[in-house]
Image (cartoon, rainbow, N blue to C red):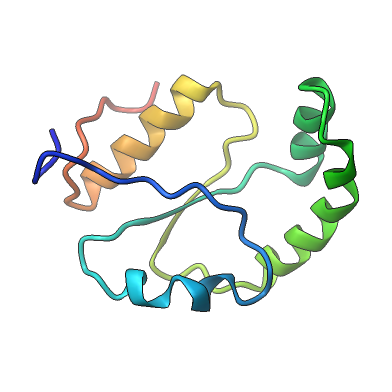
Length: 110
């Protein structure tokens, strides 16, 4: 159950290289939990193709992953969602957040 009636989620692609800096003020708030869904690059490309695009994003996948590999992940919940459904991914996020003392209601991964 949300602590103050609402939990906010920002969905963004970790690019350009100043991604972390643009959210720095938000990341300073102790209640903010950073989650990085980090499926394998080949899976991202497969998902783009499966949903029919946008195909012009495919060449940028290696660029984004090049940045992500070097990005510090300290303070992040990093999840390889390559083999998960949307529901499994949400469940894993909630489980990890609850384990860190967040307000998320969750079930053990399964």
